[in-house]
Image (cartoon, rainbow, N blue to C red):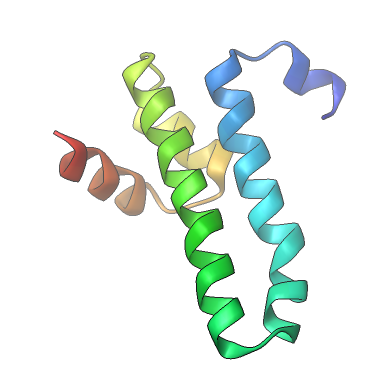
Length: 84
């Protein structure tokens, strides 16, 4: 976590951490078997989705969540719509 992240609400830090883990661990997952790749990516993506929804429930805007997660706003909005 960098110094700037420490000043953010817990929910935003969780989104950033989940996105960072997904990006950092992707190369290892790609090197694994196809089943491990699918399971690993699905688990990490689900963690990111859950963090994004927790941030939204805490009042963080979808646009900020998209920026923190480095995902297109459309994906974040789709997750939010599905959660409603």
